[in-house]
Image (cartoon, rainbow, N blue to C red; front, side, top):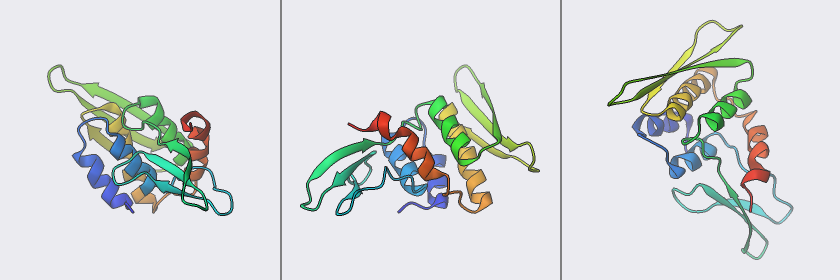
Length: 157
């Protein structure tokens, strides 16, 4: 299992979108898909996978859930911030012509201080700032399952 500190290190090393990293984010934030029925459970589709499989009593996969494309989409990364840090605002800036760098600052209107993320892409900058805020607040897993449910219908097949 990936911890928030390990996730921070993975995000720091990332240079662009990664489905493997999308899966690691879901795992670290404990954002598993919908609850399985009795006798069923969700299993990640192997090391580095962004897919989870609903496994039945006999071990057969009956449904697949795909992790949202958090590292590739500004909107999806911002939706995660909105779900996990309600009331927080993101300021996103991108600079550079040859080597582009994105910066994200997350701030809550009623909380002193802010959290910052810099990365080669805007979604990664947002995710770095989010993980910094979650580490500072001691986890933030409570709202993660709500976020996962939001994407279940769109990402199931």
